[in-house]
Image 1 (spheres, rainbow, N blue to C red):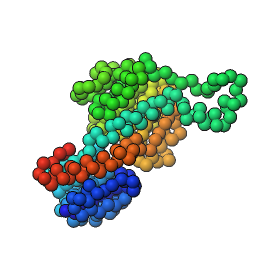
Image 2: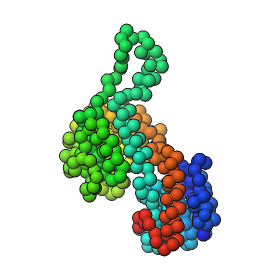
Image 3: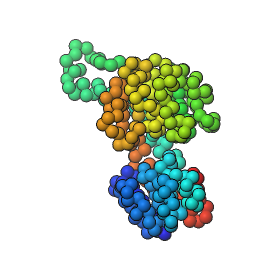
Image 4: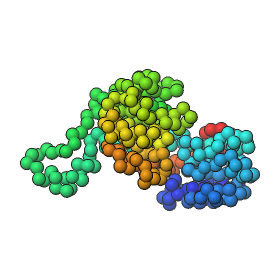
Length: 315
């Protein structure tokens, strides 16, 4: 079997092991693939793996030998799943591989916005504490999370893990989701109620027709004054210009995100100069154990497909 990985660098820059895929056929790994080169590199491939390379209807129709697409991620919006189904191409993803890592990063963003650790550590290095007459000194008072309310938008595995950590911090937990999930440690409420009652709103839903632009001027207006917004899901869930305006006016007290509307982030993105904004480079999912799990489960998906028992199928 001819197997191609079109953008392997983000998953494995050299510290992980491709051998689980190598055992299943002849493997070609490209660190990156320009859109103009995708069709050529798919030629002759029976199985293709992508992380962020987009496979649209035209590309899927032209890849005549292709029978399997593995998404090296949980989100599979980079593949036209409907077009793949029409062609008889099975598309599989890797669910739940990064739950602990993304939940950890979400809480790190929250603590960064509330405790201002990095800011004060830098000021201490600059001598600001040394110059004070008192043993305790701060320029921005930390926010105590215990007793505050966090609203989880999307109560799947990651949202539930964030909720459990927040609960351990003494926070009240609210959640909203199309379907109530067992084990969620909080109260399910409608979105409007969640926005109105939450001191912190954390986004953990996929980018779909009904969630793109979910957080915009109208929904921000329903939130508490000074609420904190977190987004470790997808940049398209928010209107970045509306978030920046809300940060400027103080309607939002902070925005912590690991995602942007365009990635890598463009220098024109207003978040780069926004007040009380922590923006990181979509790396929450990248601890080495998570990336090796991506490869291992992806290989297992392909092996199951070859055995006639496909799993983690999304189309």
